[in-house]
Image 1 (cartoon, rainbow, N blue to C red):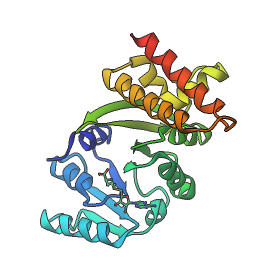
Image 2: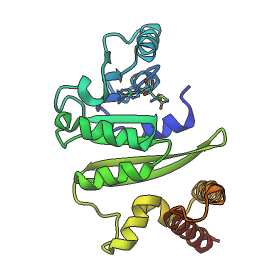
Image 3: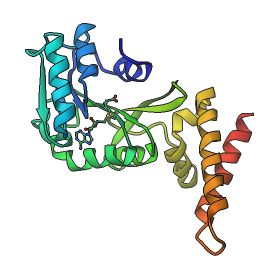
Length: 229
Ligand code: SAM
């Protein structure tokens, strides 16, 4: 059985998609999707030998070698341009996800759905999407084993979730436009934890160091939480 985080990721994969799961590790996502008859074909990409072998082993174990192609390589470089109609990149930092998308731009046709699950720094993913004309279709937040995960779903198109106002948009990029509006309990909890982390760092910083940016973030998080209470 797939964990809740990855089940949520899977829920956004369109029926019948040709899936590329990048950073697939054990290839759990492609295996699950085929077993659930959600898709017929998938590519599991891995940059590291160990996880790539784990993916091959898992695919062989469930007898799906003819449907899942396990490929060794970095990011989207394992794909032919336009080969996949849905791409999942889950369980890594947002900065890494954004750089995988940036470096693999030439492999995107603009027709595919991107389902991205950054563990941290989702802001970097949102910025990449916005800069590259991918519209956020949906955002989700799930808690599992005491950790909180964000999932971003995007397709090429006109952005509708962000505000026109530049300052508001900067905060929407940081907190997530839909997540900010929905204010789920997991979202409040996440930002309470993030605020505490920043307060701790601020307390450790010496006077004269650049504390303004951090203070500004803490104040913004406070405003966000207060609005929600
Ligand atoms: N996607 C799975 C999940 O969400 O449970 C596995 C996440 S695992 C923590 C991250 C995986 O990404 C590792 O197996 C790592 O080898 C792989 N990875 C990191 N950078 C990568 C890159 N540039 N291209 C492909 N895979 C990468």
